[in-house]
Length: 334
Image (tube, rainbow, N blue to C red; front, side, top):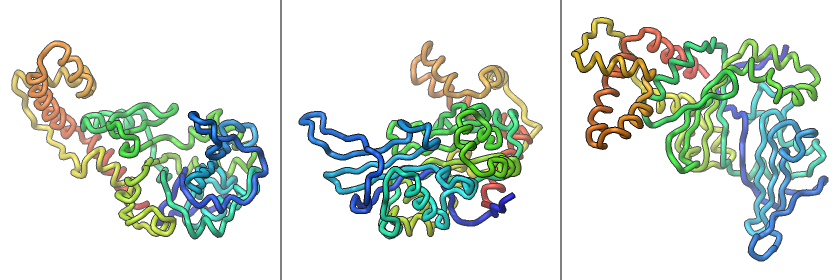
């Protein structure tokens, strides 16, 4: 089995960057045209693997803008083939571009891109060994949902995605937590695995590093979370930040839960406690149902009390405290 050692530099599952259109050297396949819908003038061209999944079984997009004289490229770390577990890093980025040139789609100027490109989207990723049980996922759902700032949804068959509850897509931090060992064996990855020299090595790696944390960051959020001045290739790959831990703490808070098993409850708190347990601490759902019956002023006051009591109840669970502490320790080691 290949040795994919733990490192202290950032790793990405998917990236999107913009560079000069001059670095697009030759078109080997016919690209689709982009036209201005008002006058029909051709404004650019693009290739998308979504339209060519039988040949390219992973995310790949190459777009040329004539007015902006720019080229946008997006790809998954699956472009690395048998080195997929290494992900996209400062050490593998050139290999990604070299492999792109071998696909028979187009030719790009690798040296030019290595000198000049700016990142627009990053899937910041880390894999490690952790049993991601249903109980642990339930705990994360409850604790994350209780903040009111993030919403969650199921991801694939064995994971969850937390997304910041805002309309602006560029401000919407997202964090996926899922069982990578199960995900790599899903039908959607069958075509990719069939193109590898030894797919079993990939599967063996994810048997050992079975849990994936994947933070999706876009636009100016890249500068904020990576603590850099710009999104130039040199800045991104030299960042020493831990953005996954940062986003995790944004969702769950930075203070560890403190267990207290001697809590007592007033009669009204007892009724609220039963309500919270009935709704699995889903404060948002409770708020929506209350607003169907009462004025916003009354609801807001009661929701504040419910959230405070929910925090007390969650603090009483030793399991909840252990889950967050263990994950923070794992992420801090990456």
